[in-house]
Image (cartoon, rainbow, N blue to C red; front, top):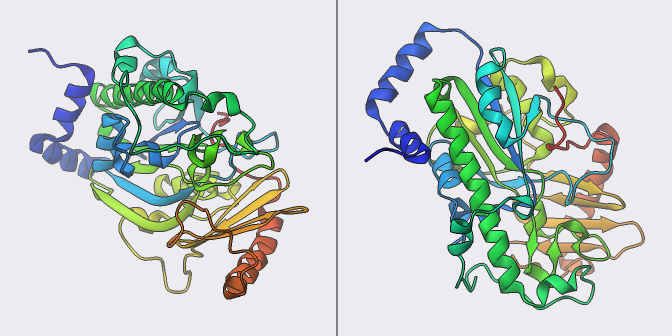
Length: 369
């Protein structure tokens, strides 16, 4: 029976013969690696199977995570598309339709950014819509429209809209599978650093909201829009099937790519490389990891570590959540005296962050050549 593109990719990734061939080629060449950066939009980590979603099918992205390193706590630099003044991550931006030609025609080593777009903007084949005809999304969950929702109409029949959104996610996943097959087909898989992420997430009925950070008034920074997938794969280099608990940010992507590939673009980033984490190593003792992710959009800023989240707004209301005991972010602890030390420390950290990163938020979707 002939193999389709996805079957071809997965069979090749699992081949011991290919693994032996990788080592030989890596030993024989000093050529700098290629970079393929795949950036989705409106896609939170919680929507993917590799992050625990039981309702939406994402086999290609899940497989990509199995072949590389997945970060559990990766955060967007903003909860919605930034409005100008964003610092790009670099690379030659192409659409999924242009990607196959770009992979073969680009000068080597290449740095290509594939803008996958939003699940809501996909042209969804009927077969992917049919996957969710009777889906109830009980595991994913959703809530009735919140009083401050800006798109209440989308929640009048949330299941219908979720079925279309899920079909879009699976269609996006098909594009990822096709890209991986193209890398394999053209002999580029072994010497390409492949990164999959999203510019920001999506509130598909969570908190009674539909959309991104602008799904509510005032702007929100809920976990579903801030916590995004971050997967790094490089055969023979990055340990497969690894899950990292480190708090990282979109601001750190460019610096990390710069250190891994030896490219000079790292100096353009206001972040810091977390390359040791990708190799399952520790940071140098003299340069400990800050363990905080910062985000900003309009008059709202966020600081997040592996347990707490602080959201500050000009004029309020402000928010503080203990994600360990309240992952749904239902109990605002900002005025709770038991959390005053966390609140003050995060506030101080945010003030220190405003200077070096002011006006340089990384927008992964607008990477120029």
